[in-house]
Length: 90
Image 1 (cartoon, rainbow, N blue to C red):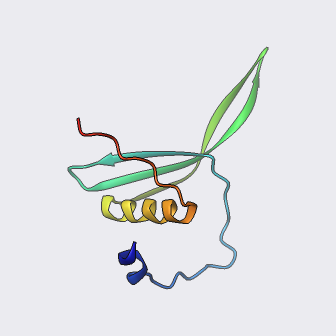
Image 2 (image 1 turned 60 degrees about the horizontal axis):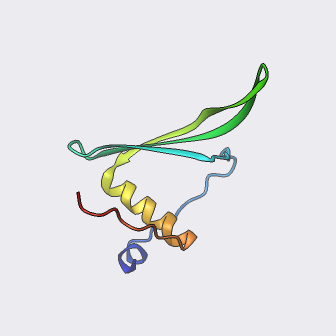
């Protein structure tokens, strides 16, 4: 975590940028290429006859290196004080 604090850069906020609500995130990793794709979406209830169903609408897609994705996730975890356990070795 100290490494993240040392590499902290000023984050310039662009006034007028749209904000979005996301309650779904999918992560696709291409390990050999070192690329990660993060998709953020919103789950919306939709009436379908007698049943209610949920549709997920994509809000944003971010493509970055796996190294940067790991840093992003580290910041998310430390900000939320949530550290999930690592899976055991296969």
